[in-house]
Image 1 (tube, rainbow, N blue to C red):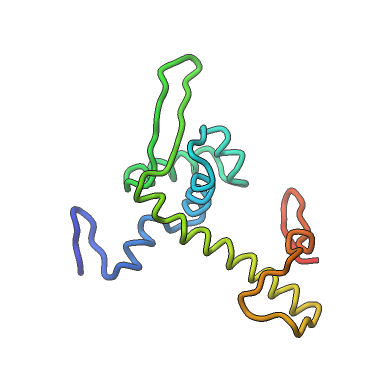
Image 2: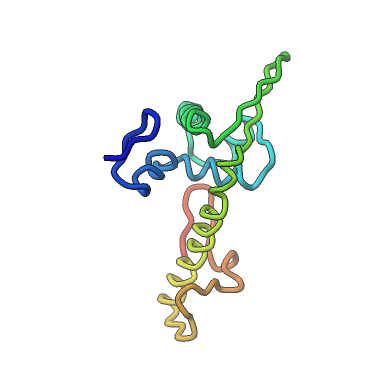
Length: 142
């Protein structure tokens, strides 16, 4: 076992997953990484499907772990803004790589369905957003 502060872990991958793992934290971090500051309501609308309770918990965890700043404005109604810390911003390239991989995987699925023999692993189809059907509940490959 390794230990730093109060945190015990077996390997650095496990440590990373302890901080950013789960269903919602990567989505919250990704959205925060696309913006300088985000108000709570805007963040809730941006992270599709998250409940208010899960967003609050995810933000508390990310703030505790040093990835997110929380700024409270003392006014009525109260205003709270969230942003990434320096260590949080250092994770943005990983999130962007995951986003790109998601586009590449969607392209792979489309190429497999259409038997596109020109597709090379890692490619992103030029019109990927047009080829992926979107609705309020699901995203499917056309």
